[in-house]
Image 1: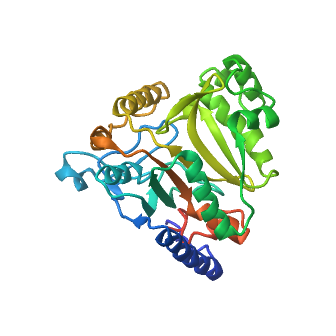
Image 2 (image 1 turned 90 degrees about the horizontal axis):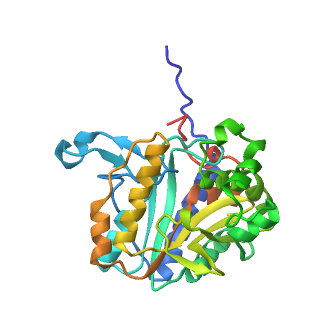
Length: 324
């Protein structure tokens, strides 16, 4: 006989009330700045090709009359950019998103994401607005800025751009068997070093934006050369060592985006993961003309966790995966 999960919410009434205040505060923040709230599909025709994110397949009969598989969205990004290309101007969305295989103190397969896009903003402009939103809600000091390269040099003692693949792999042998590391890519080694050496140290420096990621980690961000090294216009905000958001000065080049999607699927094949369909409607919107803009996705559950001083998402989510 299957055990009945607890029927009560894991979050306290205080946490639920604080979540309601957070949602109202976010909506007020954007209303004051003239940013329009939008809604886009939770169930879409396509998932994402990103090798680090696994989409959750939905009932294939629910999309396109059964002629295509549906996917629960990992982010509203593609649909929101289609709106931008149609001329909406600045937009934001509070959405429920889904990612397979994510569970733990700071992860749940279903979570609340705040995403917004600002035409005419660079990544630096958007970082200033992220700071206003986050610090306004948390009451913390404004974040500093540290480059990805400087963070690795300071906390891991290695240059993430110039170190050889072998040197990076050797640094990861303290966590992964050498035989297993033979199949790890350069970015997978960098991710290990970020998780085990850099992020724990960021907890001690106060709120901080990490900027200038490797080109291979650009995803949907523009890339430019800085100091002789090609870097992505990407930033992440850490507060108390917790990653809160991921932002880009957005790529608007259809052909470059298609090249990245193709490279993603090739990497998925090498990793033994299924290829994902490329979102042709999204590519068409880039071809039609995505305005010059920056965008960011911010985890509202983690933001609430920091506000209440708790260290587990279950304390701020009414019904996490084990109670859903």
